[in-house]
Every structure is written in structure tokens, then in C-alpha cells.
Image (cartoon, rainbow, N blue to C red; front, top):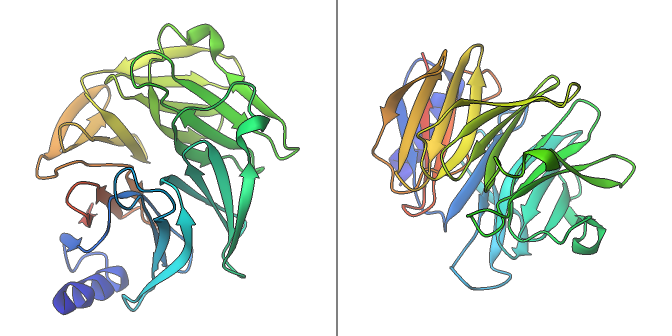
Length: 272
């Protein structure tokens, strides 16, 4: 374990030293995010079917782990905005103030236009509006919400409900929203024109999305795989995971973070 922390600290200081660092000891890690200071945040679901044992763990630049907030149900997707961390926690969205280390429900169950079933991934635009996926029953009842800074919550792309079965991974890129469905399909949606199209498929148990320029990285929870997608063509990056969950990039876009829920690990892959 000590050696892993040394590797982690060095790898964050130099993007070209280590190509693959694995940190263990997490309890069902689902999502990961890094702030501008280099701190890494990991959502830990905890034991299966046990309430209030979920937490958010911070790994600082020295490799020290700190529990930022605990007493959560099943924290999953994470996104940072304006020194706050937003977390999907079963059927609510929790806001964590990183300065005070305090947390509160930001969007409660009853605020949603339809009761959420399984809130999963989350992303944010430059104004602070949150986009949240609800994977539903993981078959056909999924939906996507936008939580506006006014507090209003809307369901978007309702006309595409025949295409969206169980949306999981979300990624905003300007006015484009990318959606990775648990059923394995990868979509591109124009938020202005309200257009919606499939750009790839074959990612069974699709979970997380990351993007570096024109290259997408997509994780498959069911297959334990990480893919690279360029111009609609998929290439396997790794199949060594047990359950590759919600991936993200480092702040400098030189690393991809892969939480493995079943293995209880966080893998840091160097993209150079």
C-alpha cells in the first residue's frame, strides 16, 4: 500500500513517469473527479443494500485519504462546480461545500417532474445547470433531467424515450450532450436544435465517458472494459477490470481515472 501511495504522488507530479497506477482499498468506488489543485474525489457506495454507509473520499496530492462527507446512501456520479461537489445519491442530488466540508440535499426526490428511480451520472454546464441521468430499471424506463440554477427541474429528450433505455454516462461539450446507455448505445444530442442521433454501439453495460479532443473513452461496467472511440471506430484499451465504472480525466487531460467497483480500486492510466 505504501508503495502505491508513492507511485500516486509521483504520477500526479509528472504525467510521463508511470503509465498505470492502481490504488486499492475502496468500497465499491463508482465515480471520480479531480479539482484544479490536483485533489481527487471518489464516490464510494459501500456495502450492497446497506443504507447510509456511502461516502466521498478525497485523495490529496501527498496521497493522503480524507473522508469529505459520509452518511450517504449510494453515492454515484460526481461533478465539480464553483468549489462545490455535486453527487447523485440514489434519488436525490447532494451538494458538498468543499470549503466547509458540509453537505445538503440540492435537489430532492419530490422536486423532479417524475420520481427518479436510479440517479446515476451527472455533469454541469458553464452556468451551473446540472444534467443528470436516471437509469431507471436498466431496461426501458430511463430518463435525463436538467436541474437549472433556478431550482427548476425538467425532463429532456422525452421524444427519444424509445431510443434512451437506461442512460448512464453523460458528458457535456459546449451545447452537445453525449449519452452512453447501459444497453450499449452511444448518443450525441444537440441541446439547442434538440437533435439526437446514435454515433456508436456495442458497449454493453455502458457507464462512463471521457473525451480528449476527438477521442472518446468509454467504459463498460458489465464487461470490465475500457474502450477508445475515434471517428466511430472502437478500440479496446483494457479488459483487465472487473466492473469499470464512471471514468473521468485529470485536469490536464493527460490521464484517465477508472474506478473499478467490484475490485475496489482506482486505476490511473497515462494517456501519453
